[in-house]
Amino acid sequence: MCGIAGAFAQAHGAPAPGRDVLEAMAAAMVHRGPDDDGYLAAPGIGLAMRRLSIIDLETGKQPATNESGQVHAILNGEIYNYRELRDELIGRGHEFRTQSDTEVLVHGYEEEGVDFLQRLNGMFGLAIWDAKAERLVIARDRMGIKPLYFARRGNWLLFASEMKALLAHPALEREVDPTALDLYLALGYVPAPYSILKGVRKLEPGHRIVATRDRVTVERWWALPNDRLDKAPADAAERVRALLASAVRRRCIADVPLGAFLSGGIDSSAIVGLMRETGQDPVRTFSIGFEDKTYDETEYAREIARRFQTDHVEKQIGPDSWKLTERLARQLDEPFADTSLYPTFLVSELARKHVTVVLSGDGGDELFGGYHAYRAQEIDRVYHRVPRVLRRLVARGLLALRPTRKKRGFINSAQRFVHGSSLPEELGHMRWMLHADEEKRALVRGPNMNAATAGALERMVAEIDARASALSPMERAMYVDMHLWLPDDILTKVDRMSMAVSLEARTPFLDHELVEYVARLPEAVRVHGGRTKIILRKCLEDLLPERVIQKPKEGFSIPMKNWLRNELRDEAEAKFDPRRLARHDFFDVAGVRGLWDEHQAGKANHAHVLFALLMFESWYEEVVGAPAGGSA
Image (cartoon, rainbow, N blue to C red; front, side, top):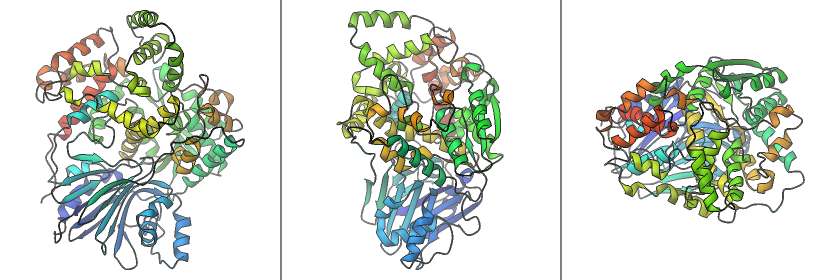
């Protein structure tokens, strides 16, 4: 695992980027690669990287080059099928100097050009410089497991694994994009291609940039299948099991200690069981528990650890974990309001004391339909048959009740359902995934966030929906989640929190061969009749205990609504001071204070939007006011 960065000048005859600038960009990502660094500086092009050594510890230095020294590559991530590709390329006459997966890129590019991306099985952000053609290729993996940011400044194209590296370049401004901020308040994250800063963009999953002295083109090189089989093949469960086992086997290749996150849910338990089946011995597992028992799943994790005789380590999260808030805000490139970043960071920190690589169960819910939101969508079809007047009476009565302190319960779940059901239908499935709806965002918008920012989410959802117009509403919901929620919330969180402690996280459920197969299976084998992950549960019947297979989705969350009334109250109160909020005029002071007072009084649960505001304020103070690094 690494952090990569670079600068490319379109102007002919441009000088090489300053070495101090490249070093500053790399230094900003030292947490991604504490073991080594590497640079290339030539007229009009500069590449920089930081390396976390996983494969080929001795000779895997980057940038990798071909025999003639004309093609150079840097890689953040892992190419899991690099050995097969290496053997094939050697058979075609290529000479390899290392055993690393990065070198496969330069020789593969020599053979097939940019189309070589289609041959890669892995997670990656990469850059290939072709000196002879004066062409730069930047690409992001199919699912968006690894990040890539880019920006245009005059004749220069800048790119990096993290925005922190771009901010180290002296040419980059730090002006907040109001539309991205509104999307952030709606979702709790900033979706690609937006970033929180104007002029900076995230390269979308499955996309690449091809830059020459004449033009810069952003293009899609892979797309999630948007068609469905009429019925599942008879051996579908068997095929899913084989593809998942193969994905786990690939991701167990490493020259360093390896383990797994274990929550006790079906996804992480499946990964641990299949690691054991591949011959991993011992399997090291890591879990986070909660002092609040309504959030705790450690009994299930311990059961799986005993079943597969793992070396199991766990840690409890207490109320004092709120003290991590400022640290985590500094680590994130953009404001981010998924509260599960706390346990994700802590389990990463725990694992890093023992291993350098972990496998995780991320992606299973999006691929197989595991979220409560999918069940809500099914229920909503029936609910909307009830006369509107009765629906309004039910909603009014439920929303008048005080939410409970515990994680779930009938009142909390029912309130969320009736509220989501009342939101505009054009949002589709996103009604169940919002942090703040349009009404709540309108309450907190200040002078620097005008009404023109509204509608961006609806337009984004409509665009994704249009690509999957032939699918059922449920299938479109999963399709949207694979394009928004998965890469920009789940994978962003796992990448930033694991890389904060120099830990590589691998995601077998997002192996593209498995994804392409499951994505084409009909809805009924994934979500049907209130049941979720149907085919996944079936294919794991002989591997996992029945109670784990049938266990409902819990989620990796924390009691933020309670923290904001107790442990985080003083810090949030300071952030929401009227004088502090007024300094940038993004938020309406009276609107924010009104939500804050209602939450403190227990009249409503505004934790989602209040935590989003708190994290934005922490990010803004850390990033927007920070001085630029390096020199021209």
